[in-house]
Length: 169
Image 1 (cartoon, one colour):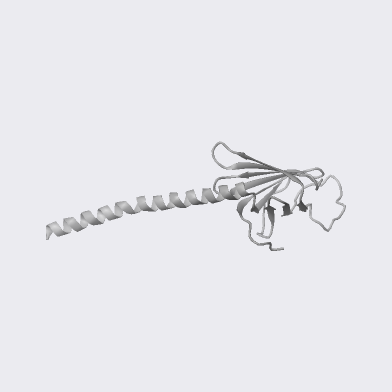
Image 2 (image 1 turned 120 degrees about the vertical axis):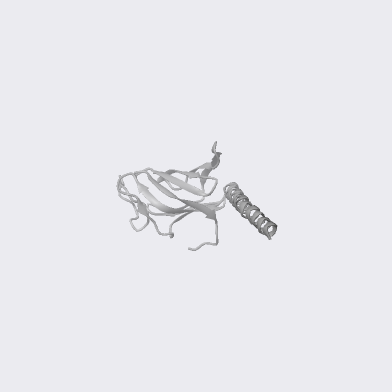
């Protein structure tokens, strides 16, 4: 009876000790799959940046609803982002948001980072109010967008990228 209890205890101990290793392997596999998926999105130049917070130069950080986005494809950049901050000139059409535009003529440059991730530089040529958009993407999909405008203070957004789904608008 003592041998049966000892055998059962040893078997239980081996099973228990092997569980965390299996769980870690599964997590590593999932992380590797996610990193590969993010790399494919950046390489294909077909993804959406969803901002979660806006950080204007002056004022406080603002939480955003998931209605805002920056849609990036090979043929266009569609920006539907809010703006909080100081404008140096009055807008021509006050009904339009400062960062609501579509660009079909733009420069798109991707640079890999040293520790994983990418820096993406977007320069719209057919929308003069935005000089450039710097999108810093981590290998896990989290991203920071910095927008430099001609007539407004810069603004930054924190969020994530995801695969481009069918258009909501």
